[in-house]
Image 1 (cartoon, one colour):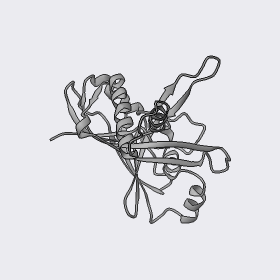
Image 2 (cartoon, one colour):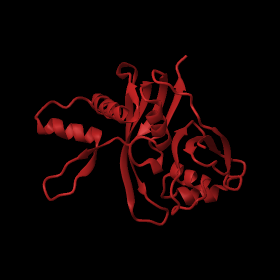
Image 3 (tube, one colour):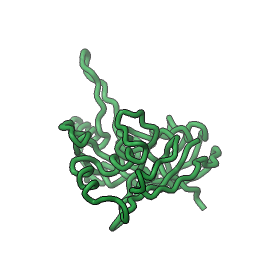
Length: 227
């Protein structure tokens, strides 16, 4: 069974000093998500999540193989079974925040690395002495190309003219509360339309997420059928 859940802080109960301690150095969404699924950083992660903010609140959407807990009443949790009815040709509106990267082959004897797609495209344009477009254009181009390739492998096609890639943002924070090791990555926000081409592959991609750094709130695609 897979569950889609909406998680919010129970502000009437959560101790603010505990939150201040937890959030001092870490990623708030990551911390709350792990607390909702037992709080054991050594446990194999069986969920992906998306963090959204309103003016005075934070909401986590999670997709998981078990229902999240309310962390002793500190969280408000609403869960339901996740089983979207998908067919080849189904058209969906979607939202996705992803750490979009590309594997770059290294020279002989050196290990290849993964590069952020926006920075990689900018670097390639410089190497080829081509003009570099404004960042908004670069993010749209690199982001859509990445998402199209994801679709080829994961059973969907992107409606390019109806899909926006923006919100390019860098993230940098400590890996754990008492750790000096830093996590550093970029994300792109996608908002658009797609068509399912292989329902089985697409459902698997929804359950596992797209892109990297999924433990930090990336990769969960929220979908809704077009009216």
